[in-house]
Image (cartoon, rainbow, N blue to C red):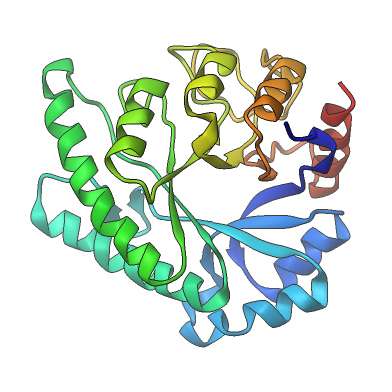
Length: 262
């Protein structure tokens, strides 16, 4: 059993640069998740370990593109082969860059939406096939592909679907987005898939739909959730994926300290 007081504090910050890591350090954060590196300059990936050493902040994970990402389409379940190729063309350089930078965890949405119930199995099979391709590329680059649980009609909307991903590919792990569960409670989810959870997206919501509110501004029972993760021997960070206008990066650390004391 792990101890919540040992979990590091992180934040999803978007683009990575020395300046953004220093801002995170000034806010008291331990690590960050990125979506791309500043200006997407391949030469900058090699500088990341130096930036980390100077600031004391770790670039922990990278969120791979999803849906319409700038001018690019990103969807592992795209029917159109050209759109799937665009997904690969966008993801592969990010994975390779993260490998060079020492960023280990690649977070991915397993699908888009909406899906009709009668089409769900078709797209589940397609996602399993495509995610295997991407996880193999991650493995070749020293990275781990982490499937994010998703809400509504997306694939990965409950522990049963997340289990299917895990059981069909031993290289996959889970990014637990705690504000995406709409079909089961947090404790049941963690009991079933907790051993595969290696990172998180932390925010709050109203149990009706995702909101990405600041923790303790919604309905999540944070004491109960943290206890479940401790029971599951979770050792990753509390990585916040939320930043309402009324809060600052420094508030993330303060909020996480309050959660630990519940």
